[in-house]
Image (cartoon, rainbow, N blue to C red; front, side, top):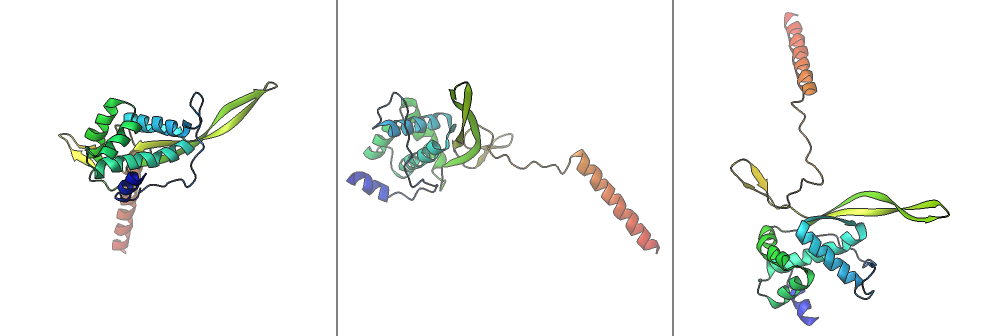
Length: 204
């Protein structure tokens, strides 16, 4: 505990919203005393592998802070640091993901001040909960997308390529409709109207 406290005190604050109350995370076939950490561990592993994942909202909020802290350890501590290695070995359950963490993710976020993740809340899902006396009862589930963020662009031979996950943005960029057929016709009509107005004013 003392070692982790010294290391954590040398790291910057996590620049992401952190829930003040630990979520009650549990699942079947996992010891109740370890279920919360095991669930979070699997989520962090999956997030490093896929870089964008859909989770229940409460689990996404809880897992985000652990992903942020793990990335901070990789960025601000050396790879050979014993505590960092121990944390990465425990949180990432697959060996190839540990290599990806140090060789891909850490260099990606080295010059980024954070947060390194983004959380997007999705519309609630209404799913069947249980059936009683031929009556179906439904329950609303809060869902969110947790992803590793993009960190700028680099120039390729064709265009700027985003540095980050390969998926399109969850919140798309506003589309430019200035050259659409309708707007082009309106612009031409406005120009003609102004030209006619100027001509009539000059004749007077």
